[in-house]
Length: 626
Image (cartoon, rainbow, N blue to C red; front, side):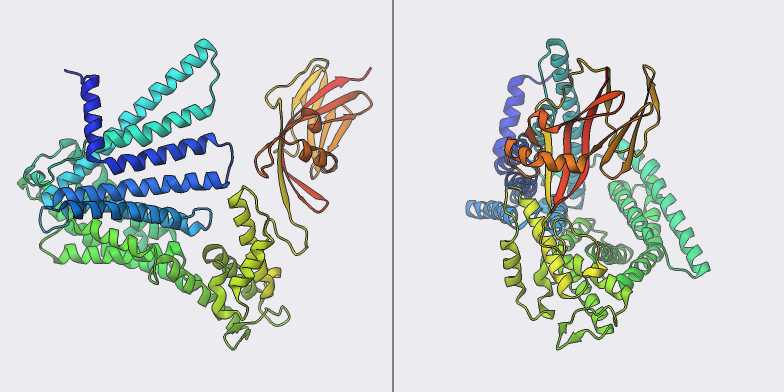
């Protein structure tokens, strides 16, 4: 066996870069952004936000540019047309960089995954948009699938090898390393090596694949003895369940919709994997299986629509129910096509699913517009039911006349609408200009480097304003950062300079503080019975034999907070702020013991004079009194 030389590997890499320059640029941009994100010791700030957005853009950019390259490769195009298509792919990627802010709205995170799915599907058929070429289309996607698995295997082995080498250097030469180096090694292997390796295996002559009749025997074995039996098991369980609910005349459980989609995925994938060999004499049963699969899908789709419809009629449409319904409709179309059509064009599957995914992202037909309209109308109906709509304007809920259950439902829907679609989505039913209200609330929101935190605080303020304006605050739950008082909640995290070191000289015992246990078991060490108890919130008690030592953290933190803020080396609100050890060291005595409570990390919130501890690490240093 002849191993490739370094020179041949370098030439192969250069050839891949020359063939896919834009794809490599996007991969490099995403890798660098991920590296900066790992190195930045901040969370949810502007840098963290933009690094995340660059990584998202890189993912979409690689897929779009690869689709453009494959399309160009399959057609005779002028240099101007090629340049225009590639420029369009880059422009769309950059546009999505600014459009998809994951910390601005959770809807943008969903949009990103939908776009990523759509662009993956686009890669699958970009080189085969014309008529025919079904065999070449199948061979091309088989090659991509196997190349993906090979790339993942090589990348995984390479990462494990380098990680083991780093660990060996640390162990043998006492060279300090951090967890970041492993994250960065993984990032560069996944972002650059894996991408280069995968791209280098993409066929150049896609038309030649039409004549390729090769079929991996292992693929048939995997499909015949793994996928098809699993799909058969799924359908047997689901059909038995359908018989049960018909016999008992009951509504199906919501989870059944996901199981039906799982069966559809297994079934369609198994049919696609054996597509080239279905016509062979020894495989006639495959055509029978394909037909039976689609026939059996019909009663299951009716079950899916029944389960989804029951929840939609009761609770309205949300994004997830929209996707479920859309996939159900898509499956109906695919089933009808493969049962009726004689052509059996498998390209229809990725093309139709790609179009469906893109339609779900933006526009009046999108998942987000439809869910907004559905939930808003549902909320308005609750107000109409309680006669609280006047001249198409919502009136405040009156607890003396309004139904409590309706109030709780309206509060939940209102919170959802503001969280997912912003306060301005309610404008048709408000007299006040909600854009001006939003601007006013934004001016009162604390601005700092934690962009996500500021936006979260602003969303909470918008939600509380709308709840109070419509008299729904009493029906709603708690919203962080905002209350009915004028006092705003502040959050702090402190750590000490010697967090990982404990000096025990001069002490008899060192006892790790157990924050998450209300009452620990009794331990006996050196004839001292030890027990940690939380008798009152944020008051930590240590029982040493019959002695009791207590630390009231609310009082202690209130006393040390002003000094801690002044001494903090970082002014970031959510970054652990490093302060001198003595500011988080407290002492208490009992009849027989003197206890020093050394806190290494504490996270708490402060609202007015109230302090609430959310996490704490520390150690009790105990010595007997003379």
